[in-house]
Image 1 (cartoon, rainbow, N blue to C red):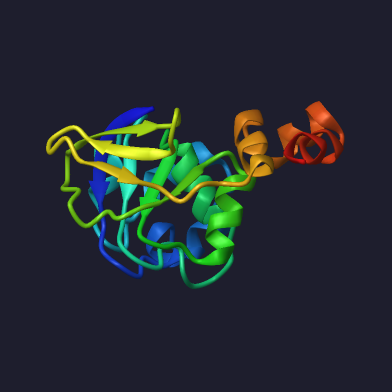
Image 2 (image 1 turned 90 degrees about the vertical axis):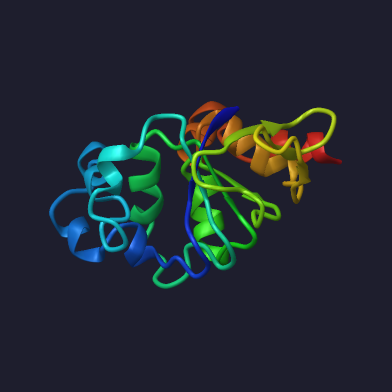
Length: 170
């Protein structure tokens, strides 16, 4: 996976990602994408392109547990969010909705940098501008299986339960 870095600071809460008043208007990802990060930069949503990667500092997705904060990001065509840390709820909501949360040192990534996500032989991120390879925290096999399926609902539609994934992880 490769994409352009769209950089944010620490403590980006879910209301910054998509303000809660917007979820009363629609839950359609294609509608929500128009309001992505409007509280930080009202012009941002018009500049995001499918394949862009959100890059942030510590505590990304803090605040309320609204799943729509992931829905809006996915609706914009973003396939991964890189951050130094995530709120626990946002992290799980991301996986459950097919959005890859990557925990790594994002301090050297700048707006517009080309980023490549490496999965073999190690899980890491390469900054194409600097050539730096940043190790990323690994994910358990079940989370990879959910992400590969496109999220938790597609995973259950395909597998029915977690038995197959649990057996493979033993």
